[in-house]
Length: 365
Image (cartoon, rainbow, N blue to C red; front, side, top):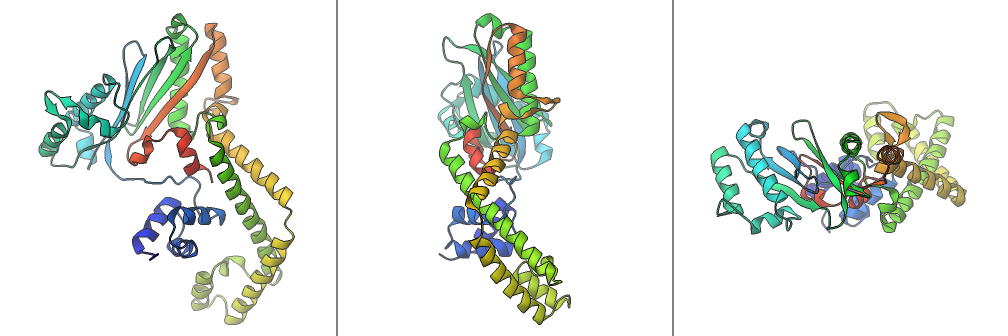
């Protein structure tokens, strides 16, 4: 497969790795994009906090709930400039779409809106009319309607951060209808919404992350741990020979540092030999059981920090969100359960329609 500049650019945007490293990864992986992502992560070159599909669009994320809090909606309406996004007319337009989603149970994605009408006109015409008046391209990136099934009690809570840059929906289930109406439940749901906005969890709990994702991430963590241990051995060997590891950590650096006069050909040749022999020796003596234990510990720590119920509460890091949930249950005298959440940030790609659990494979590093 041909390795195009665009493919290299997309890999760089997704992983944060350098252009040359991205090209190298694509060559090694025969142009397979996802395999190249894993290749860079195993090498420790991809940034763990990169998210795929970031866009630079402006607009508003609007979460809404009905007065009885049993039904909710969340939408992301995009435009081209901040000027339009901050306009009251655009806000009214976006809220009209959010209310349409709120009253239409069939809307699960933005595409479902195209089956609806607004003021007697097809939804697509409604969008086109706003494009004509603003002079900007406008689109609905995401839309979702949520509701409690009959017989189930609870509330939806909403939170908007940064004038619509982030929208959060929290779904809390209660044992009884009376419990759902208690102010303590509202306060609890609001605190969780603030937590979600601030900490951007990848899933409700580690139990919600599919086993295939956990297995994949463990394998990546194992390979990354191996690479780090081999790298430490190589650096130690280089330093022993009075060679700065940073000057010879890649062929590109060797070339550029020779051009700068920081190292000579003899040093480069010596470094290459040290890297080759030390890497092979270190790889041959790696303790697989120890590496698996280190990798598993790292992954468990990552999931604990990244899964909502396991996260430390931002206002009191001595307790977790799970502890906060138990405290709220005691306060109202009935069990409450955090069922689900949505956290949409303006400018995320339509892939953001995935559940938090589905995003876990993107986020773990």
